[in-house]
Each structure stands twice: as C-alpha cells, then as structure tokens.
Image 1 (cartoon, rainbow, N blue to C red):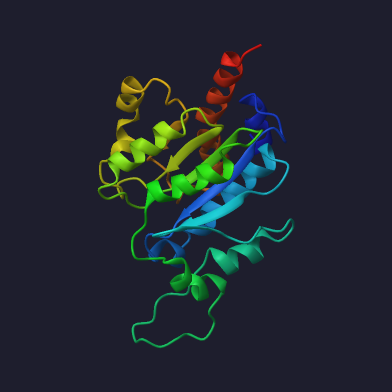
Image 2 (cartoon, rainbow, N blue to C red):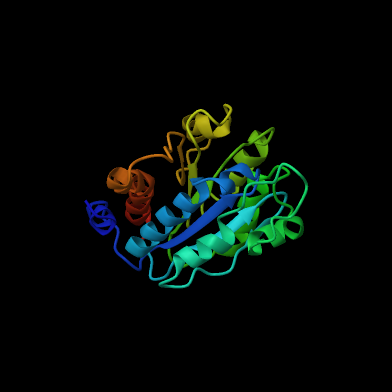
Length: 233
C-alpha cells in the first residue's frame, strides 16, 4: 500500500486538506537521534498524499514558532537544518557546525520544557478560520500539569476546522488528559476533533511505515466524513 492509496481508501482527496506538523522542543534528545527526522519525513509523505503543498512546520517550547517552509525537492536539506542536532559535547565546547536550529535555541526558548496548551492556542489563531480541514500532527514529548489547560483548548477548538492528531512514543508519556479523550467526549460531546496515538513506534521498518502513516490519518478521515455529514445542506 502506498500513502496515496491509503488516503484514497480513507476517502480523502488530494488538495482538500491542510497538513500541519508541530514538533516538540521540550527536550534536545529526540533531535540528536532519528526520531524527529523520521517524524518530518512521515509528515511530508502524508502532505504529499493529502495537501496541495508540503506541511507547515512549527516548533514549541515555552512559545510556539513557525519554522521556514520545506522546499519541494529538498526536504532532506530542511531536515539537516531544522530536525537534527549534533550530540551535545561532554565538555562545553562548540562543535563548530551549528545549524539554524542550534542557532535558534535561545530565541525560541527550546529544550527547557514546553507548553502543549500554549502551542494549541497559537495554532487555533493561525488556522481556526481555514476553508479546508486542517490535520495537525502534534508531536508530544511530555505534558506536565497541563491537563486542564489542554482540555480548555480542546473545547475552544471543537467548532473549528482543526483535527488534533496527538503523537507520542510508547512508554515515554505519563498518564494525561490525552489518555482520557473518551471521557472528554462524554463530558463535551462537541469535542470530536482529537485523537491520541501513544503507540507511535519510531523504529518501525521502512516497509511497514505506510501503515503507521495510515493509522495517523484514519481518525482524521472519519472526522472529515462526519463533519460533511453534519454540515448544513
């Protein structure tokens, strides 16, 4: 199965969605390994199947910032600039090959914790009036004491064309409101535009990767269908 076939199977037509990737700048470690670059590659493939352009990419720490656009034909150049960090040296000496991400750490307030709710608020302002449904691939590394704030943001966005696809690594997230989305929907039935994938295996083989991407778009596709069904005729 290819990603475009997976999109068609889900009933999603190319050019009818907007794809947004939100990277967690909570900690440095994911950028030193493969996790973030694999995340970006997956988002690019999903956007190529659903969107008329490559994904918008944001990064959040204490604040949320939009990163430069990924240029067609050169995602690996973008990844080298914005999704990769050299291993932190044992001694406090610069390795001398700082990329744009490394040079932006202080300006963007990265790697000192991050606010999921704060990023959600920024994204609602940016995409809340979109004429196309927006699939937000929202990478989460941790979410300490933010349950109430995130729940409020989910409620505020319940009538907007945003679908929050939260993504986390298996066994690396403590229990949070994201694990209680069924309870959230029971208390606030309008909140149908959120899903949490906490079995996001970053080490999956390349051959099976499309099935992981398919799992990332299925809940969104269901929400899009329901939204069209409920839209006034």
